[in-house]
Length: 397
Image 1 (cartoon, rainbow, N blue to C red):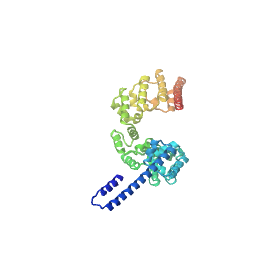
Image 2: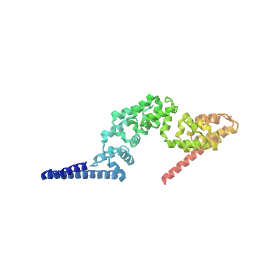
Image 3: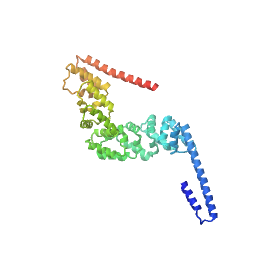
Image 4: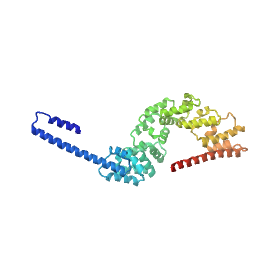
């Protein structure tokens, strides 16, 4: 704007047909304009300097972060930001929480904490959110503090709650993804999912595991893609498949496929396993490879069982697969279990049922079986304890 006005004034001064007095008037006008612009620029610069100083000294932001924030937020006095910072501290927010909030939503630093922020805290508390829940929710997504409580947050919470069995489950979902009560796509996307045929349990599964999927911009394309893969929207695995496809990038998916192909499986076999149990593709490439190695190299068993029952990839090797495999191998070696019996069943039954059917059932061998099983379980616990100690030592160093 400054360059535009200066250009116009100069153009007028160069008009040959203007009398000298008019030129003098225009020159005076230009001088006043420049002085005014200079004063405004200086004031704006001083304001930014004050903002940066406050953000670094009071809030502990780095100079780089303070500079970025000052481009979105400026204030002349510390009165408003002081009241907001004090408010957050009084409600259990630590300085790193406050820094995160400022970086994500700087405008909150000049909000009215009593009129604008406190009512949202009170609403969440009324639904069962603890002070720590509120701190987590706000730190993750402070944006919801700037939307209307009555017009948006309350209806959005009620929508989430309609799919959850309790207020606490709804709060848990909101803590995991606070955008669910601030994103305007939530309501129309939920309506789309219902119209598409997803059951309430499917929607609850998404709210419980990855609520951000429901708020995504390309939800429709993702849902249609899963249906084209052969998943029925009315079945429970539909939301699991949607979660798997949305939570995994193409490169991550390809890496997992490559691991399984290295063990001799075809892409069709892998895809069919995904259709049977989509959760298994949420495992890391290392976990997939470790289970394959344990099953094939360690036990010498048929690898096709794993893709036929891909739920096995979700179990802990040390706490489940290895202890139970030792029992199965013992029974096979003693002729207490048919060789053609399901190798899969012992690994998927509950702990209580496993001990009843595969340990206590064989009276003459039960003491040996129980000792073997407990040794494996204790070994797993010892390894976990060692890993925990190692982690503590790393943190201490």
